[in-house]
Image (tube, rainbow, N blue to C red; front, side):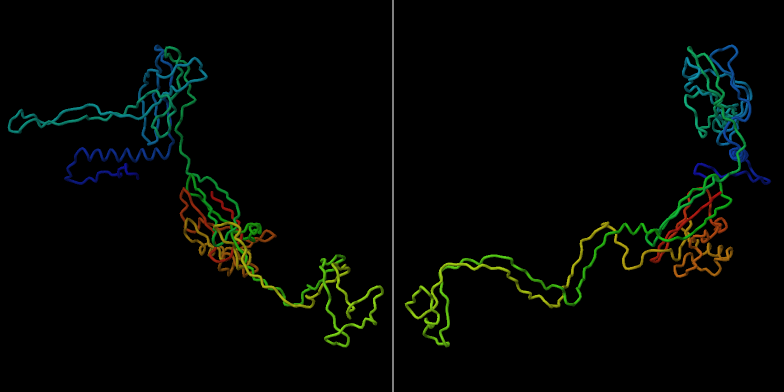
Length: 450
């Protein structure tokens, strides 16, 4: 009941009761309210009988509306007892196929009539003045007929009877009756059928919420099927922000690091004038080399030395092999550090555990209410494969009945949600599937409402 509606009340009569006008109005309101509420539920808005529109036989500017009955959206009876003449009004057109507006409509209306005055008029005597009172004695329900330029909505209270063509000078042309809407018996509320199918990879941070709307009435059945499958490996191609710690030690073994360098040719730097020191014969610290033993032809020494000063010269280097000092030198290198961050900047990667596989201990919510235990009670009593099962999904059970098998078996079978005492009134509802541990996997669902 809205804030504008009044409670449905009637008078409780008893002997000796003093009745006033408000009591009788209460009885009238009760009868009308109940009847109109019933009409608005049992019948649609429109014409019940009669109310046909025709040209006036003598006045080209008027139409005639035949007696008849219609119902508006409040269930009020619009009753025209006698044929009525209506002055045409609207937009003239020269093309009968294009009539703009000019809708003749009928609506509920009432007025108070037959006013009277009652009481006494003391004329300034002992009664102290004019004490007369009174009001209209009747409320007459008489419908209103008028033209409108737009097609009215059902909740406007206006019932369309015809669309009237107006020629030049506002004379009546064609009368289109195809716009009339007739009241018909309302059908019993029927739920609009729903069939939803899908799949979702979930984990403890990413539940799946399935929203659906019930329309047309309370459904006869709401059936849910659930299966579990492996988590999609595609997700592992998308990594969140992460770093790699580097703690690398090479093996403490002999490394093959020995190598040589060979110089194929080259010259030494040119040296200036110089002499060479020498040892004397027999290791003496004085004296010189025996000239007679080291005689140089064509050269005469003035002293006892056999080594003459050397002039500026260089030496040719050919086939020089460099040192092999790293041979057989075991050692290792310690490498420590952290790579730069990569991936999404606001989400950490899944680390420290195995890749997600199947859901474990799946929880199901309907409109925020945990219905997991009720589902288990129903399916463990209905399907032999679920006998003794205490949770939806068990990664430690190789024969988990929730897992979809390649041969087409697996899953919960039909879960009759309508048998769990849940509210399936028209409107939006939701089913949420989630896990609370570190497991994760794919949930496949089918939902049927009808």
